[in-house]
Amino acid sequence: MGIRDPTTTATKAFLAAKSGTQVIIDAIKKISPYDCMKHSSQMNIAKKQLYGEQKSQDIQLLNEIKSQLDSKRIRAIDRIIDEKTSGWLNVLPIARNHFDLTSSEFRDALAIRYCRPLLDCPSNCDGCGSPFTLQHALSCKKGGLIIRRHNEIRDTVGD
Image (cartoon, rainbow, N blue to C red):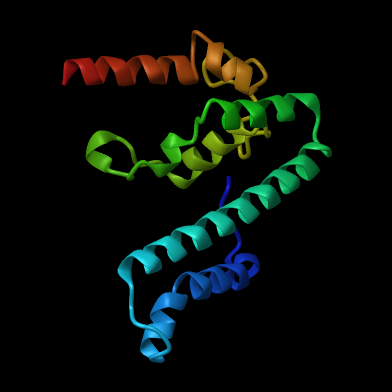
């Protein structure tokens, strides 16, 4: 999901912050006078260097992970990266706008996103009794998600 482990990035982040604030450090130690433009430039250089290193590490890790996956999951990950479909992960979970997800809804959304099996699913469809799969839940006309989606749209339009 792109969430970095702070225990592995803290040292590099600290060194980048130290490098970026060197102008302030020198001014405090009275080695040189404080120059705002020089400080801003030094911070930008430190940030770019840190982000460049992180990006190359991320690409290397992604390639290692993809080498262990099947083509279906590789395609899902490439689609997520290429089409920048992670916006829903940054949305504030406001109940008034129905942006709040339960833990199971969030887990299911991630499972669908990364082509993983859904957990805690019923063995049979509640509408027609067929074996329950994600594909069946998305297409069953008698039960499952089609009816729920229809009802949500109906209720939204009604409101």
